[in-house]
Image (tube, rainbow, N blue to C red):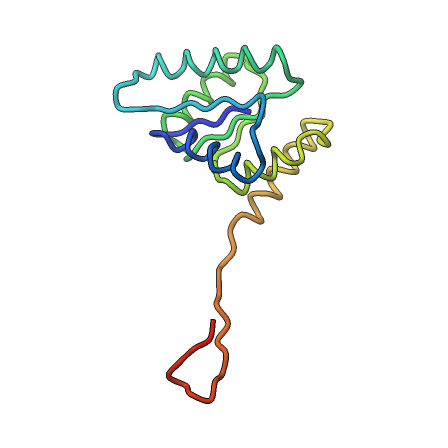
Length: 141
């Protein structure tokens, strides 16, 4: 898995995910910083891909936003023939779900289905229940 983002988001996301899921093998993070050129970032993407594809059956790449530079680099890599599954919407819930289930995912179609399901479940409104109390000025949450 390659996690790519503007700034250090991908690196921080992996660190947070590893607090939940433990240390993860075969995951690379790429950070596009103000000091880094497009060419350098693309070279890092190609290097990460080459290392992972030599060790793994599939490479999944997640980037932060559609249309941003990491997205554009991934698109260029795909157009040049790099065989990877690539999605936008890098988030902790998606990464956790994919990492915890990756051993049971046997095909590219399985991986894509898991990504779509994880994205669908990643966003939910949080509502706090209001508990009626004798003293309506205080709420027990």
